[in-house]
Structures are given as structure tokens and as C-alpha cells.
Length: 268
Image (cartoon, rainbow, N blue to C red; front, side):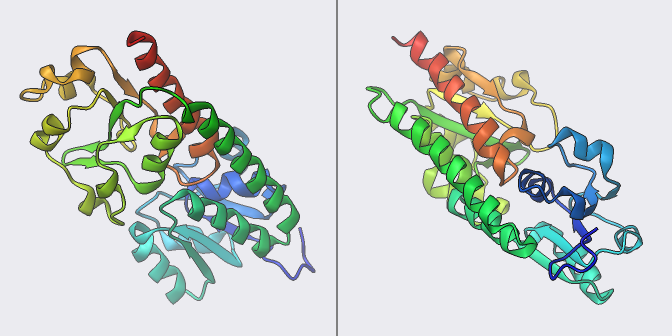
């Protein structure tokens, strides 16, 4: 398995998006362990040992697969990374928060594994998808106001790449400025702010748990929101849109387009 390679031959992936990218680059044989929260590709869950959660991990389980590189994502894994480094492991931490960062992550994985050409092709394919959808929605006469909820208690609105995808899909994120904040704790909003924004569409993607629509629509005053009054409340599974990788573009973006298309159909 790449024994004489100048590139890492035993990679531990602590978040789902790097697993998906390495499979897309044809580098899945290098993966020796994945997060239990890995979703795509489906065969990864069958083929690869699960060695971590997302924000928690037993470093002994990571050490057991003898990685020569650990791939991590975000400040939420800072403690895991610290333990891995102390244990003598090489670690690369990604921290992308926008679409450009997703492309950069793919390019970096291409360089780390000697699959630069495949990475360039994948990036071009994703860019083409984004541009096609952007152009198809650029001339739409009406752009609905969208409130995206990433978590319910406290109410956390969209991370930056989701806000960009809303715009590409033909909507207007009512909290676009808030989405530019790096940490989730900086993207907390309250019910009164949502009431003032009067979103036409609400999209919920409660990270890691099932969306409860009745809990949302029964919030004080929310029955008068255009989105609630007109039945324009949708769920997009968090695995489809809240992992900063391929699926956000290939799965999450089309789902956003579908949500906004339903609003347009209702509003002529």
C-alpha cells in the first residue's frame, strides 16, 4: 500500500469531507481510519474502521491504525489534535468556512497524496456545477429572503459556505453578515431578529439531530412569518450541507434550489 511512496500511505480522517474527497481522488487505499460521523461515500462506512467521533476521540484508537498523517477539521477538534501531536503524529488541520476554502482543501489533499491532476479536475467539476446553477438563477425576477437555522438552542444561523450557496441558488440570506463570523457562538441570533427579518423561506439543518418543525413554528410570533404562514419551512439533512466538502455543492446546493423552486411555484 504505497510502501515506497513519498506521500502519506496511512491517513486517518477525523471528519467526513476529507474521506469523500480522497475517495473521489482515487486515494481511498491510503485511508486507515475514519470518523463515525462519516456519511459518504457509503462504502467508506463498510470498508474503513471508525476511530473517532467528531469533537471527541480516544487517541489510542487513532494510534492503533498507525497513521502517518491525521486529517482534522476546525477548532472543534483542537483538543484531539493536541493529543495527536503529543503522541508524535503528523497532523494537518483544515479550517475552511467558505466555498473557496472547500476548493483549497481539495487542492491541498491532491498535493498531499500526489493526485494534483485529479484534484484539479474535481475542483473544475464542482466550479462548473456552481456556475451552472448560479447562471440559471441569476435572472430570476424574485429572490426570496431565507433564514437558515443550523441549530435550535441557541438559534445558530448559517456558516459562510451555506450563505454563499443560498445566494447561488437564487435566494437572499437574511443574516448574510452574521454568516461571515468564524465561530458558531458568533452566529447566534434570537427570535425577535428573525421576526424583524420576515423570511419568505426557512431552511433548517440541525447539525446531527432530526429537525422538529413544530418546535420551530410554535415559537412566539413565528406563526405570522411569511415562511410559516405559507408553508415554506424545509429541512435539509446536515450531512448534505453542513460538511464543508463535495456534498455541500453536489447535494446541499440542489436541495436549496428545490426549496426555493417550491417557493417560486407558490408565488407565481
